[in-house]
Length: 306
Image 1 (cartoon, one colour):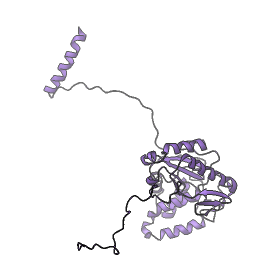
Image 2 (spheres, helix red, strand yellow; image 1 turned 90 degrees about the horizontal axis):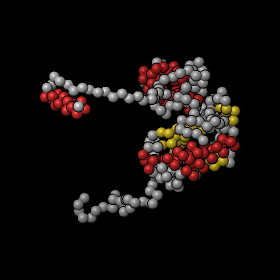
Image 3 (tube, rainbow, N blue to C red; image 1 turned 45 degrees about the horizontal axis):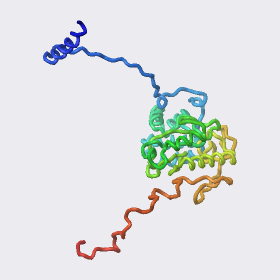
């Protein structure tokens, strides 16, 4: 009997709650449990043997001259506005933005270290952990997902060839792999940024060929891993041949730009840009608009309507 009257009682309670503002329906709160996801990687610092304030860092002579030129752009009382270019110089010299780099920038600009930490933790282009000599940043936003062969195929080719996943570095320290959002080369999708260079219109085959060329250049030139790009910590500035104090005894590649690539001691490296043969972002099927004669001073209307 109780089971028959239960629906009727609940219906009447609901109806009475609508009629009287003093009667509120019984609220039921559901309970759920989810796994705790830590998202403090970019905000929290923990001292480690390779990243702590006791590790000395100073800018080399070349970068000191560059810093002097940069500071001339700002009034003396606003020189803290140079925090971003100085952090970039520190990252290019050391290979990543360590706590010692941030502290040195804070000292040079006479600003609280916390203000420098806030900048370095906000912008993801400051690498707060060591990266390989070549930092692969694969875009997986919608245009790269849909353009060409799709970014999924490029990601799979990188993972298969290097044996690493996003967020990891190869054992030899040559490659670090990161999945990123839009890099602004949507018309030439899919694309990958390697250090400062964009490689676009990629296919799995061209991606693997590019990686093999970089590996061959490192093997022939004796370039060690763990140093971003061709930079080294030495008095010769960015692009130094010797990585003094960086556990790098090999010499960096002396790249000479050619028409369609870079030549480094017999190793041919593809030039940055589209890998499909087009020079910029022109339509692969040729010009499709503005094919008629352009209006200008040489071509005037003769019907008197000007």
